[in-house]
Image 1 (tube, rainbow, N blue to C red):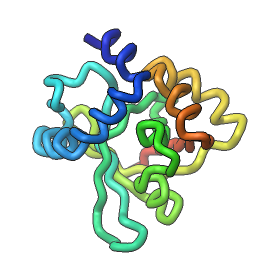
Image 2 (image 1 turned 60 degrees about the vertical axis):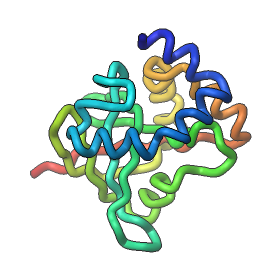
Image 3 (image 1 turned 90 degrees about the vertical axis):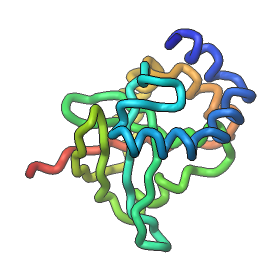
Length: 154
């Protein structure tokens, strides 16, 4: 199933379908602490990122694929290959404090936009999770933002 998803994930049709079901997927993942998605048990590494809305001040959730870099989470603002950056990335730029729910546990994090050198290093790990990111970048016509989410000691 994972290899089929990775192949289909490169297509425009899959991106349209993904955008269409993302709200439902987010609600399912929130209700099950990330243990279930619209496709059943997640086979790809996914987390629910909770940011603070930059205009509303309200919590905003996004379900994202992620890679690991030691104890840090790495996410990319692909927005399914759309021309604009995803709202969650704008929220992190305005307020880097966030929370991730992964594998049934919540972790407070502080985000930073990856430097160019860091981004180059981390892109390989992100592509290993989801090879479609290169196609998304080409379709979008923009550099996809890469964020590193550092757990807050607590």
